[in-house]
Image 1 (cartoon, one colour):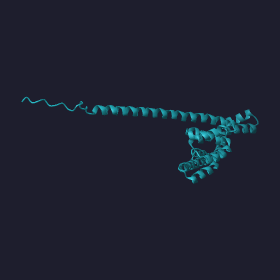
Image 2 (cartoon, one colour):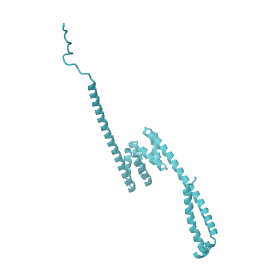
Image 3 (cartoon, one colour):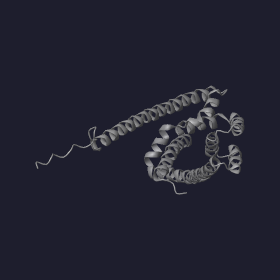
Image 4 (cartoon, helix red, strand yellow):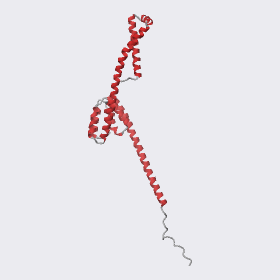
Length: 244
């Protein structure tokens, strides 16, 4: 993996500072004292710089190789997690459509080594609103470690879906106080958000009903205005009599 220039410079800077201290300490010991080393450094400063540069190169290059491999490994893990999470999304769609095989696969993914896969699977299962599925989901999530539970709380809080309330309520009663506190805060946010949405929906429904009533009344008035007037009782007036 190709490292960014900033990371390469940072590695060189850290190694250069460390190796300058090591070179100074070793040189002072070999010269027999600080003043003797300073005198030798003044007389042979080019040699000192060459020694220091060689030390920096000898340490920096292996360090860059190690850092590059580590970053490549992390990038590969993240890419695999993204791909697997997308696969979880497709399984979630099938599960919501009533595919029992997809539900069983999502339950199995709750034990996946990739944390994002576990979080997305748990969220998808929480949306099914099935008692048997919820029982198995809660059983598995209850035995997750603290970091996994905290990550799941973040995922459910960002989802802002009322269907996640049951799982958040379970996590709010977790034995770990950090998980319980964070889940309780997320539960309050999700429920308040869903409540405000319900209020907006109710208000818009009332506005739509009022508008429909006004339109119906206007249509009745327009119909009455366009209807021809009825003749007076007794029939139409008689024609005037002939003078003859």
